[in-house]
Length: 302
Ligand SMILES: NC(=O)c1ccc[n+]([C@@H]2O[C@H](COP(=O)([O-])OP(=O)(O)OC[C@H]3O[C@@H](n4cnc5c(N)ncnc54)[C@H](O)[C@@H]3O)[C@@H](O)[C@H]2O)c1
Image (cartoon, rainbow, N blue to C red; front, top):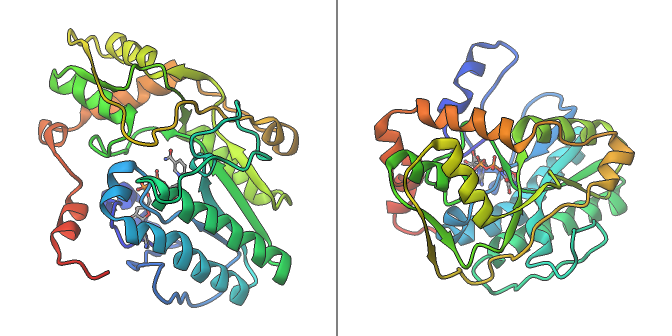
């Protein structure tokens, strides 16, 4: 189920020929109905990159709150187990490093990123309340930066942004002095972690991500080396509330799920770069996601 506000049907095209597969074009923030039996619900619907949630803040808050409420209601009705996609952003700009699940976070509720961070914090609170009040089987994945093929080149996240700039022969833009850190998890590793969490009996939030940390300045150099671009790094001022450090403590995932990432950044970046390089030049120069652009041109309905 997807309203395609930031998604792209081309990503799931190969699934349409499977007879077990059904697709609902629907906004989960509205009333939800799915006929028949459901065993598991995975609630991943949400704008996920800063460009998206800064331009559609109300929809972001709604899908984390009303959307989550609807999914929890559906799980209750179907007696299904539900896993919700939370985020490392619940830690905000963390004062604890690396971030363990016990850390409560440092979030500015009315800052520009607050719409995403607080939506996800509310999502966790609501999910936990359904677990304690109704005994619903719930799982909460706190996902850290994840990357891989099929991301949008211009979604505002640092990894596709750097690769896009390198492909177009532009300088790589670092915001701030580049000393802020990120930890990047390859998508296949994350999927394995989510699958194990779903099948586990652990109902508290669990960090899933790759603990290998890198500064953004070092990361830009890695991309320059990978792509062979002759461009340089340019520095711009840091956006408000940009987290300075981001590194998951995955001790819980290791001990409870027997999970840890296996794909190195070098391997994952190579696969991801090959994917972006295989796209048409039109894609390289595309400014925004098409469906998103169409949506943003509509008069506001919120
Ligand atoms: N990729 C990451 O690094 C990362 C990190 C932390 C958390 N997450 C979470 O994982 C989930 C998936 O992220 P992603 O990176 O795959 O993003 P994505 O934009 O590729 O996928 C999100 C999907 O949700 C859909 N959607 C948004 N609002 C909707 C609504 N109201 N109803 C139905 N569909 C809706 C979008 O159209 C899109 O297809 C999100 O909940 C995100 O917050 C992702």
